[in-house]
Image (cartoon, rainbow, N blue to C red; front, side, top):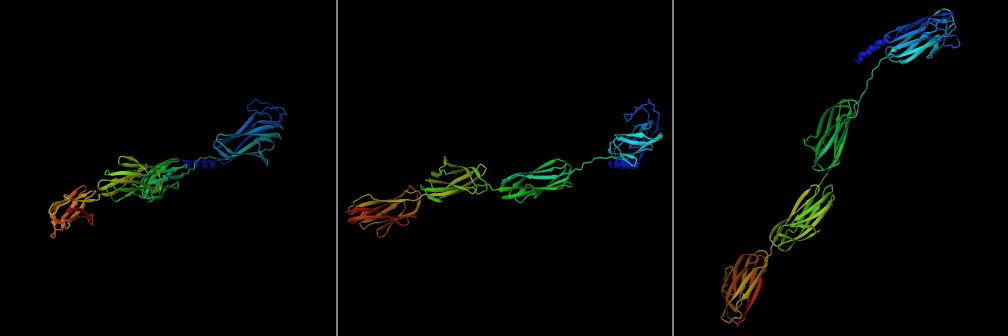
Length: 508
């Protein structure tokens, strides 16, 4: 439709550049007659006698404008008079020129608006005239000759028509936002904002998000593509992408938007992935005898990049043990010791010590754990083999002292385990003096009397538990005077070097 209008306008311009001519005639006379006709114009000379006269006009028209020239039918010689030229536009025009030749017999005085006076011609130029706009020109002449004078005017102009169009331009932008820091292993949200900042429509909008190696999308894809299509002026789209942190360090996520008519735009969001962790370890006495002390050290360390808060350390001691002390002193809740730390900075550690004892043999496991406000929790343990220690006590008693030669007596041998662990392979050997002769022997194990009558050997006892006692008896006969001393030797797997116990008996 616009092209048709432009062709039509061009046609009008071509067809309307011809000059139109409009004239009127007037008769110069020496007779002054007032007229009753309408359209009377007074003489511009206020000193002359006022004269009325009739008006005549002629007009010309085309499809651009109407042009008329009008003046009085009769005027008096040497008396000024006014005439009019009227230009009315049918449509918009430009460079309109009105041209009037000063006829012979008339003298030009002035005009409103003022004309350009060149070579006996009067010119008026109007640069732009709007549709239905009218321009009136008033010209003042003085007749200098008595005759019929024809006054003519010509108008020419160029047709003008316009239309307005606005040139628009889409401007695409993209912005990616995400957290500056994140914890390793967390899933973190990113937002992509694509916007048309221009005043034209952005077309074929496509977003490409490149996933760095330190982050991971649930699809496992390394490039996420989102086709937006069309974005109106000022329109924006938000896209959310969740990525999991899989590698410690700084990772930059680059996103790009392409269009078919609005160019491209890029943005980068960088996130530093931090390690958040806590370590706990516990070391202590590997083996200890019952009722002795076992010491333990619990070390809590922050090996990561961020400060930990509200660190709670708990140590649960075995039910078979007894707490003797803790340093720093913790809060005791039954079999649990609790320590609280307000915070633990990166690279820092804290050591907690406890001392235990146990009266019960066995491997007892001591558990410790740490937890933080950030939701971290770690556990550790240390075990101690608590074992008893065998402590054998040997006693030798003579039931009759002194003895007459020929009298019989008895030696009682007792082996007691006063310790806290079994002893094994307990061996008893009795060496008798010359003044006494063994008759019989018995006890916890079988006995053998040597051929020379000097030694009684009892078979080994496989095991002797704590608080248990082995009893042996040797029946003897006194045979000669003297201070007879019996020696009893005790050996076991624990007692490698024999323990000797003596008992004195007087024979008289």
